[in-house]
Length: 116
Image (cartoon, rainbow, N blue to C red):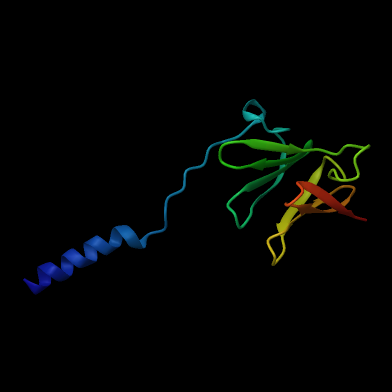
């Protein structure tokens, strides 16, 4: 009886000890991406997916895709449309590198601060 109970406990724990299985949906311009040419992808600490492309930055929430593109007349827009790298600092602030500089995303105001 003890062996049966021990075996049952082990079998019950096997199903919960493996990591969760995540589903991934392929995204393209048909789904709203600014380009099919993804240059980098980053998941932030909120679980949001940042997708850098050759034609702007995309933020995928799991339901919607938001676009961020360079606007020559707006100094709060991202510095270039070609996204090279996406990362996050210890405070959870996204940093985006483009061909034309480094950008800090200001979540509170939904804009970018440009650095060089």
